[in-house]
Amino acid sequence: MVVGKHFVVVIMVLVIATISNSVSADPDLLQDVCVADLNNAVKMNGFACKANFSASDFFFTGLAMQQPANNTLGSIVTQAFVEQVPGLNTLGVSMARIDFAPGGLNQPHEHPRATEILFVLYGKLVAGFITTANVLVSKTIKQGDIFIFPRGLVHFQINNGKGLAAAIAGFNSQDPGREDIATSLFAATPPVPDIVLSKAFQISYHEVDAIKLKLAGKP
Image 1 (cartoon, rainbow, N blue to C red):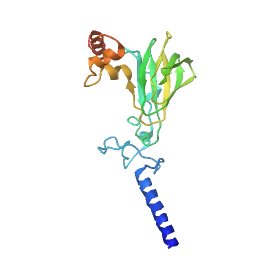
Image 2 (tube, rainbow, N blue to C red):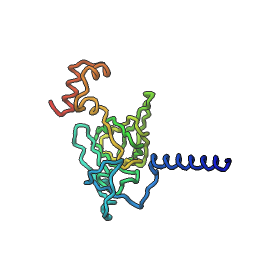
Image 3 (cartoon, rainbow, N blue to C red):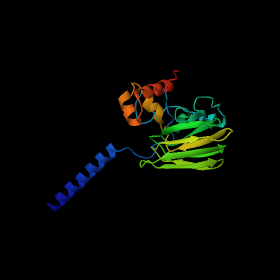
Image 4 (spheres, one colour):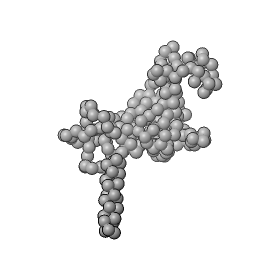
């Protein structure tokens, strides 16, 4: 009878372990590579693996080239995420390049899926992030310096110098995601109600509409 009880306990432990393993995903890669099939319609946490791949799936030259930051903000981001480098699928890393015109701003934004490490290629930037206690952590960084932006916290960089600046960013996600704070609030579709923005920013409806028009690219 005692042996029977022990046997039942062992079976129960094995059943619980099996259920737990079936519910939770294996945190490690289960194959050497899983090159993203960007045309596959299957929806999953990442991309399905394509059957055939080549060295070009692991190669990208875009970060070597300076891009003209001739837009309103004076900055431009060149991504090297899984959409540009399919070989990154399931590997949990990616990069980007940010080019700044004099006075250029990489506007306040956050990455919901990644911590960022920024390396200055040339020029000088003011970089900062804001904690959930509304504390600004900011520093002037120059060529060769790095600065860290914790996952999910609002952050920015601005080039206060008279010359060009550029930086390389690394992320611990194949697709960090990006939410620009001003654009998310004032250019959402459908739009955030004016009363919400008016109360949150303590501004008039007229000012809310003016900001919405500007972010929509309308005079």
